[in-house]
Length: 575
Image (cartoon, rainbow, N blue to C red; front, side, top):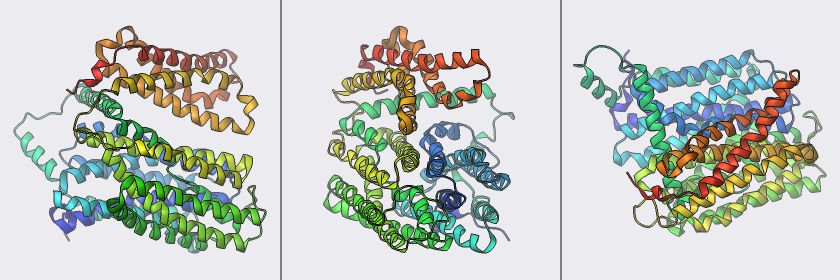
């Protein structure tokens, strides 16, 4: 039996992209719900689970980097984007199956590392699917197709989370990995393999008369590097070009409303309150359904009543369910994490149901409206680049939130975590009024240079602030991991700023061109400070690493301050 090429018909295309997004949602639900639930039952603490969930989102925060690679490297035999989807789905299935050999909870570090690799392939798959959609869907299909794609991701989360939890009650934990891998491979076999990518077929016909032989690898790598450079320049200008676009960068990095009931903390509390796997699965299933419906409703209301006004309302309303749960935990005297086999607390199980369902109503309304806000401030000339970067920043914000919530839960208790989550979730309301749509179609306005200088100064001072923070880290106690997480974000942002600035500024950067590159690499290298203990047996190397940990941010900060004093007139050039 010959399977149909679903890309050949309208209904086929809609169904194909729905199914492809299901494969993106399954691993997310599996890790964030099913595995996180089991880890808590095994006695793993909230901080470790938070770091585990954060690692799941990190590759998605940098998925933009895969775009040029996927655009440049292509296969004539398997199709351009289709080849990447085939490859990444096979690797996703293999890495999920590899997790079966990792013992839990003793092997959590290795388990997290393998899952990080798995999600790197997942992020690459997402880029390839979106690229295929842009080049395959007809203009009058894109609205419905995007709705179905998002719905597919939610269905996938329900299958990977609630579905796997239900299955565990029958077959156990380990066989559930096989179920997740098979779900991905079913889409690979029945959807992806029969595909015939029209664009790839045209390319093959164009190259049919060319001489046999592959393009030299050096030329291909050079082309990929050139496209990465173009991305950096384009993104830099679009981010700084208008007040709305510049504000959206900070908006993307901030938590948009309270986030704890949408992350691993919900699964942690469900286990501690006494819910069984079926109860956790049912709760997450209803949360997924309610959230999906609310996304449609929230988007419709924002179109009619104003996006910024309604988004602000949704963000405020998201705090209500979290504060309600905080109050119920206070009434029941529940605060610090307890053993997973503690007696059930029926009152808190009921409160968690009420809080989670109501939270997903407002969180769903927020989600679609937030994406529309980002589209409003995105310049049409660089839409794909700029919007993808905003989505990446959102994923980075999720990873940071998952990390700090686990740390604070263990250090100060769940109730403080809920209150801090509400407080930090409302900060974005200060930025929201500035996210207005840019006037005209120019990438840069007359304040672009000022934004660049201010960004360089702020990042430079933050890099220099690392020295006292690192030297006095022992006095921070339980707050040290939060400080580390904050500065990791500062170093990554500073490194990207330096790399982009050296390309945008051209000759205006002067003698700082080479230092900018060197300092960017040093700032990224500081990330490995977490492995400093491995050098304890080698004093010389340990001291050298300590010096590098301090020197990198200092040199980077001074270079950023130097850039602030340079001319940024090149930002107005739109070539």
